[in-house]
Image (cartoon, rainbow, N blue to C red; front, side):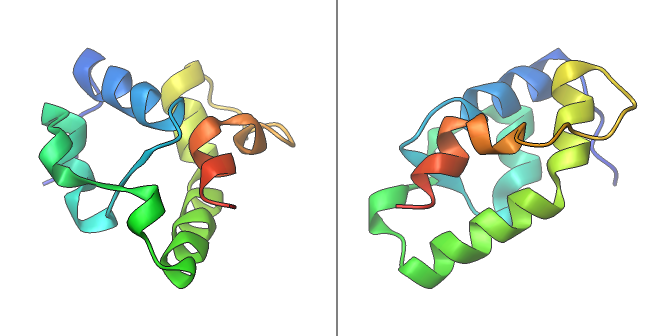
Amino acid sequence: MPLVVDDAVERNLRVLLEQDELWVRRSRWPRWLRQGDPADAVTIDTMLPDDRLAARAWLAQQRHVLHQVLDGSAERAPDGWLDERPLYVALQD
């Protein structure tokens, strides 16, 4: 079932990308985006370095879709758009 992007999904995605403490594992994203339940998240400081690297890579692959949802644009994400998000920075450390 495809995820419908409504106000709640947009809000939960924005909250996730603009914070630097929690990550939602990919298998939990649809549920978390619909409900915003912190129980679906893990703290970044408990993640293994390989898991952080994989999370950053996945976010980089999804950057254009994320940009479209958050900025309401059909355009590709501009260079550096994802690099400025606190979550993406936190996954680097």
